[in-house]
Image (tube, rainbow, N blue to C red; front, side):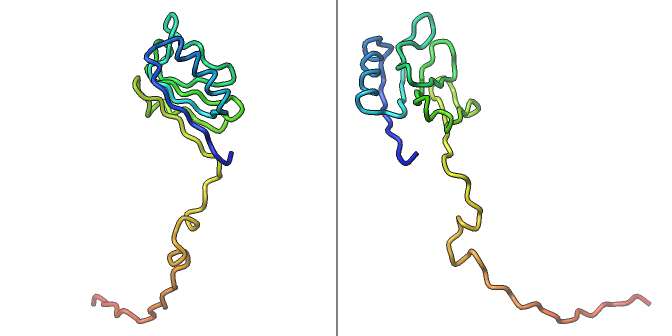
Length: 127
């Protein structure tokens, strides 16, 4: 996944806005849609584009919804512990983590070794 196309909208619980979002996401090849106040019917978000997976903190009348295309949804993780009714948090990690040495600047990757101090420290014997 080289790049990610994201759209954001506040639908104000409007069914027509959700229908328009479905057209917009298809025409503009949107990968992820961030939706505030999604339209719900009987407490369930509806009118979601069919090729998207929905993530929300609440199954009943969510106030924030994240839609991710089903073909890339396996790259995302829903972080329920950081989400709340007003925000839905998802994370992605498409690249494997780098070793810590790769994250350091080159000057700190291989610090110069200090010479060992072989001096003898006198031991005090109790007599």
